Length: 92
Image 1 (cartoon, rainbow, N blue to C red):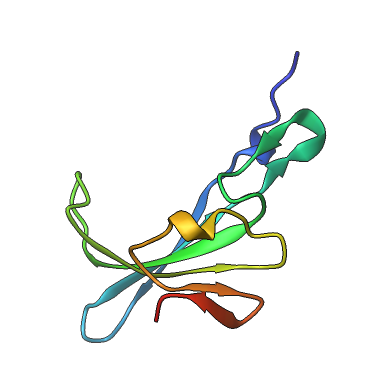
Image 2 (spheres, rainbow, N blue to C red; image 1 turned 30 degrees about the vertical axis):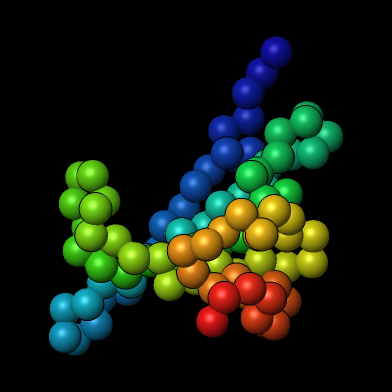
């Protein structure tokens, strides 16, 4: 039984402003449904994060999540707004 690492790759894009603020766009892959591997929310989504990043991430703040049609279980998200297909569906 082989394991395809591409099914689980978690990518983070970093933006540092001229003022020194750090923003992360944290990409969560959707997994591989044919292999019964799915993400927490059922498909590909991104999390926007900012703050003072430490090893324990106590200073980070989630600014929001971005998903598309099929994004599931967002009712469990209470720390930031949720956008699906560009429409605010929770928070704000």
